[in-house]
Image 1: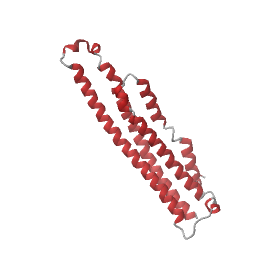
Image 2: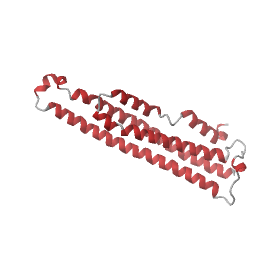
Image 3: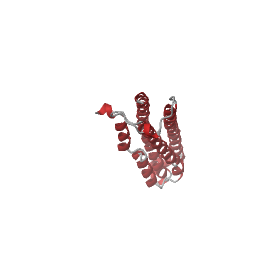
Image 4: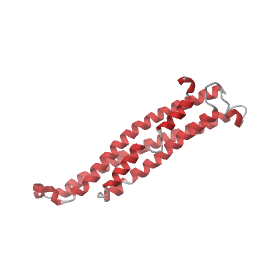
Amino acid sequence: MESIVKKYQQKFRRVKDEMCRWDELQSRLISQFSNASSIIQRLQVIQDCRNYGALKCVEDIENAVLAKQMESLQTILLSINKTMEEFHGIVSSLEKIVRDSRQLVKAGSSQPTAKQLKQRVGVKPTLAECLDGLRLLEEMHQSEYLLKLSVVSALPALALKPSESGDLVALQQLLVDQPNIPREEVQFIYDIVFAEEIS
């Protein structure tokens, strides 16, 4: 039983590595979203000829500036899509870790009973706590990924209605907050799994 718990702890260390990658991607996504939002908020100003002053004498200036901004926005949206693919890669990795962790319990010569799953060896976590912890972390990140996906997929539509800048601010705050990954809960799971290292 103790050797299986150690294997689970190794899986949690792999999850922690994936979560570090997630944090890096989170910073990148917020920056990309902020850049896209800035362009979208400028579109309305760019399309108003009164904002060009003396530059109005330059032939087709409005269309040229608008085309350049749209090109920049398209580049940022492509970068966001790549970032989202990397987020998806992490979610897939977490799903595999959870699948493998279920197999780990079944791999032994005899299936552990419900009582054995909840049996504690010293300060080490129970098998049930390990399984539940991994599943919870995977579910949190899966839900957060789906939320991020829905937020970034709203960007092209908002580019067509730049007047609704309040929506952009609200969506960006949603990305920053990561509501589906409560930090305290994640830390609590790790405290349980690595209790003997903390004590």
